[in-house]
Image 1: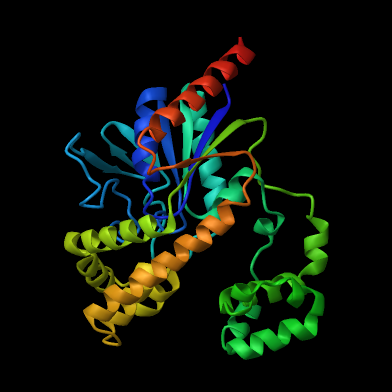
Image 2: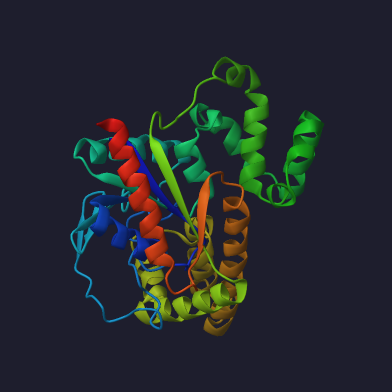
Amino acid sequence: MKKVLVVLGPTAIGKTDLALKLAKKFDGELISCDSRQVYQGLDIGTGKMPSQNSKIKSQRYKLKVQKLKSRWVINGISIWMYDVADPQVRYTVADYVKEAEKVIGNIIKKGKIPIIVGGTGLYLKALLEGLPNLSIPMDYQLRGELEKLSLEELQQIIQLLSPTGWKKLNDSDRKNPRRLLRSIELILMNPYIQSIKNLKFKIKNYNLLKIGLTVPRQVLKQRINLRLISRINQGLIEEGERLLKEGVTLKRMRELGLEYGMLAELLGGEISQKQFLEQLSVKISQYAKRQMTWFKKEKDVFWFDITKGNFSQEVEKIIQSWYDQADDKTD
């Protein structure tokens, strides 16, 4: 059986909680699809633990957690693609796809269902559909020169090299130095791109079922605020201090974004703890909005509003039907 289940949705919506429940019922194992949960030591800020929201968390079960190499085991369920990379070293989309594909294959060989828990849209797209640009190596000498340039200079270079390419960039891309830098690399390496344009990383011949979680915006904002307070109580700021002592620089924290980017400003003395909480809440809400914009473009997704009391039972019904039909096809 080559069935792969996907649970996707914005941050703070409860993807991991649902996925663990589904794994118990349908004999599955989880694969995290998150660009920062791959890093060792980034635990509280990235939400590796389920049910971190103190108001949402119930007393139905106690969490038993084992942290093993490349995975955690929570209440007997493996969550893969946690802690696979050093936070001081950039881990790429291509790195993720290569390792995640192996994990999926191994889970299937065991007769279990891989459950991809997705929050990073680009990683999910690369894993499920393939992105040709993943196989294009970085030109480190070129990158070193480009990294010295300002945002405005990078924008000017792209406009000169490829006016068409510039027009294709959205407003967010045009203001993101890292994306501009990579775009310049791709433009300059165009002959190489053409030679491998048909190469794709892709999951082949898998029977996919995508479950999407959604919620009214105001409710999601409340969940984000509650979870952020919970994470601070759990030691989010102390986690940042520990990472700094272990050699993760403030610059690197900024590159890791969101919670860690704001921690860099707090630990660097640029903002107060009150400003940290207020500004981070806004940034996470904005991020969640971008996630939903991305995920709404996903095809063949069964969407469920988590505020509906029986949504998890409805999810299970759809999965059970898909599970049974897939079994019939393999008999």
